[in-house]
Length: 229
Image 1 (cartoon, helix red, strand yellow):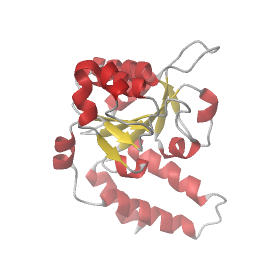
Image 2: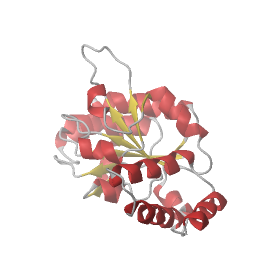
Image 3: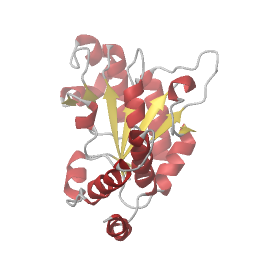
């Protein structure tokens, strides 16, 4: 299993510096950022990153979350506010339970770990894109952790579970070429389009998350594709 940590629209250089330092502490060799709202290489970012500043200098920047997660099989969102996660069909786990579930997934799963904004966290649309949400249990009177602190806890759990850090080169090399998953989703979407279903989009989302969470084999995907055809 490989993990890609993605920072969403970071606002404060202090947090960027601490996040870089945390990433290097746990052996990550690359930082991935979506639409930063501050200078990744600013004076404060450099000051707080210390010897991890090269991660900010070489950070990969994306214009959108979809672009950043295109090479991921499973998306895990992090949240400190339970109420934000109460969307239809959403699964939310304590952080250690989420990591244990990831470890049980079969094969070379590519996990995108989304770390929300340092002022407002993940928004509703981003939460909807996640296959599971992970929550760090804290004092309910003051539940929200600083993003770098939350990142440290998640990376510790991931390392503790002996997951390999995300490698950009390795992920590209091992990414399957076939579009079997996309073919199956398209067939399923075509099948339900003629049904009297109130919220077809939500049903398609449930089916997609089931596939990602169960990680079917190529043989299993072929069987489903054959059945739907």
